[in-house]
Structure formats: C-alpha cells, structure tokens
Image 1 (tube, rainbow, N blue to C red):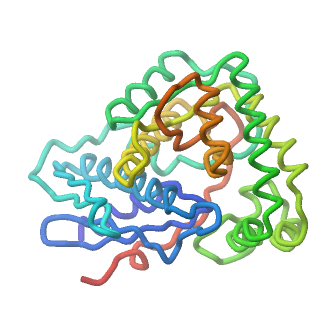
Image 2 (image 1 turned 60 degrees about the horizontal axis):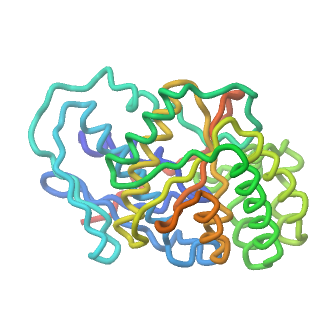
Length: 317
C-alpha cells in the first residue's frame, strides 16, 4: 500500500530521546497522525511539548514523501482533539517531485552530538532556515556575538539542574541502550560518543551518579564552539504552536543536511522552566516562547539511531 510505504519516511523524523512517540491510522483518503502518550517523558517533558513537536516533524516528513511520489496533500492540524495531531488527506495527483532535495535528505539526516569544525555556514543557507520558519508561523533566531556565551551558560546551568534530579537521570538512563542492543528505539551509547564497553555501563552511571558538572562543561563548550547556535520559537505556547515548531524544525534539519550541515539539540534551558524566560531575554525578545535550541556545523559522519518498523506504529482502525 502506497501510504504504508510513505510512512517509512515519516518514522525517520527526530524525537526526544528517540522515543518515536507517534501512531498513524490509515483512513480512506489519507493518514491520521496521533500522539502516542505511552512514550511520554513525564520528567523532562511534563506537558508533552517535545512529544508533540516530534509528531509535527513526522508530519513534515510525511508531507514531503507524499509530494515526492506525486500526491497533493490536504492537511488539517487538529490539536484540539486529544491525541489526534493532524489528518493528511490525498487531494489528487501532481507531478512527482523526484528531485526534491529535502525529501532526499530524509534518509541522510542524523542527530550529531560531536563537536563541529571551525567552519562558517553560508549566509544564504541561514536565510533559508529563517524562510522555512516563517512559512510555518514560527521564528528562528541565530545567536550571535556576546549572546552566544550567555546561551552557552544557560545550557550549562540547565545540565546542572537536570542532572541533580534523580528522577531525570532515571528517565534518561531508561532510554540509553548498549551499542549492541537490539532495541528499536531510544539512544544507543554510540549516539553519545560511548564505545561498546562504556555503553554497557552508561545507563547505570547516569542513573547512579550526578554527572552534571562534567556534562555542563562539555555542553557549554559544544554550544559556544558551534558555528551556528539558533533558537526556534513561536508566538504562543499551545499544542498547535508545538506542531508548527515540529514541521518547521523537521524541514530546517533536512535543509541543513542538503548542504552537508549536521545538527543536534541543546534544549536544557527550554526544558528547565525557570531558565526558559532567561533564554528569551538573552535573545532580546520581549515576547514569544523558545521551543528548540539547535546547534549546527560541519563534522564527521555518524551512524543512524534505530527505528521501529512501520507496522508497529500503525494503529488498527
């Protein structure tokens, strides 16, 4: 079935801790996307904000796949209906967009947590990120000059606060797996730069010890040293805004990959409630809500993280 096949691209979207918190229901003329709250992260994401953003990213991947294979889509964003995120209906045939670089980047996108080269990202590419954000009713602020140090300090402070919380560490450890694990979700140790032996011990160490000081120093350096540090945000802070954030960031990450740019997130100062307004202030904004903090740059190739197969994310009618 063509829709089932296109879902292979939707499930490659990024998600917090690689929880893959989505379900798809195939209906007569399209697909419904649902939030799978059984995969929620109640400590780090108590409002399911990042969960819904992840579903928005899966929606953007699905839309790109449909257009690539020659289907026009009519999409309704439906966050008022409980777990239903969106309904994507096939609205006729179009010429297949077989040369769409964003679609081609779906299978090449990865979260790359390693340090990046000291090499500038072209201004034209940065402008395309701003344009994508605007298309989806979001904003994309590039952090420059002295603001970069302020934001890096907030990332560091976020690490210390989060890692001092045993519940946070327990939740994080539950989603980190040994490199040789057969798990189809979560983060293998290699995604955090752990060799095989360390990946076996990693979850135990994170669960047991407050490693906040070391993590804070590492992430501060990553933030300050990234060629691009940027914040995607919205005017409001409701489920609809989160879906738009996911659609927007989904496409921005793919656009980056088209030009060989890697990305990863440092969302700590957004996840820690008391730091979020400080992050907004650091941008010089009087209003709006930061949703995602992304770092970008050139670096070494990294392995993909695992994915659940499509059949396991299709809800029965």
